[in-house]
Image (cartoon, rainbow, N blue to C red):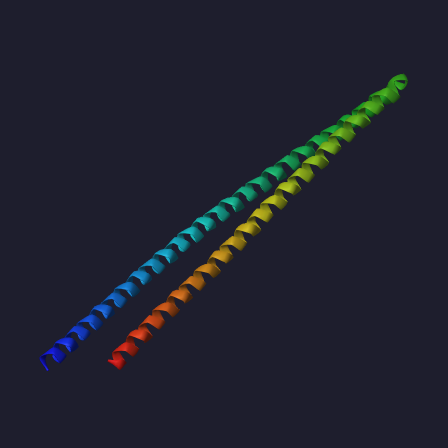
Length: 172
């Protein structure tokens, strides 16, 4: 009978040690999951800051483009004024009219072509900034979804461990 009692005591001690080990494992898993969640949150915050910086860069670029366009319009107005003056001079000097007028037209075409190229370049830069912004937004959403899945999985694991622990207690 003493041996039976000793065996029961040994079994109880083993079960207690197993239970303690399970509890410690659950605590470690919880701490690890919490650490992963915190890491994801830091990464999300970093992405938010990068997104904000990209948006600020985009706004600065847009402002720069607007200033450039204003400058071009001023230049165009100045060129139009110059063209009027040249036309007046051409009117006065008939023999030079065709060569001077051709030169002015070519200059105007070049300036308009430059203005159009600058507008096209500006649009490309805006499109690139918008695409980068959209990609960052998708990555943020993906990270949020991943974080939510990790938290749910952790909760399910902890719930299952708690249920198993309670079941063991009920069975003993």
